[in-house]
Amino acid sequence: METEKVKALIEAGLPGARVEVTGDGRHFEAVVVSEAFEGKSLIQRHRMVMAAVNNEIASDELHALSIKANTPE
Image 1: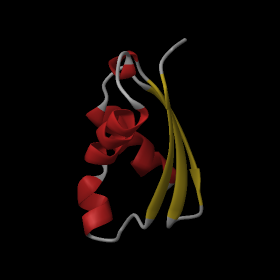
Image 2: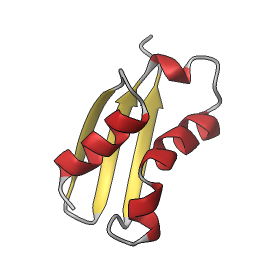
Image 3: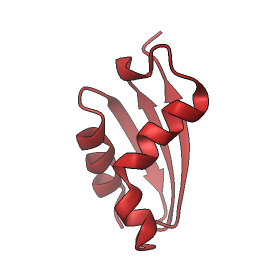
């Protein structure tokens, strides 16, 4: 899987988010900044990002995703 595909999936799941993805094809790190995270706990933020890539994780196309989920502040 390419970093651009992971980025596109997260952007589709969280419209308006700023997303940066790095990785080696199986293990990725995503930095996601979204207003949708306002008032959410860290676990809720991570679940929102994981929901966007759930199918790829279930199929093992995406093996691991480390997430940094921040609000614009």
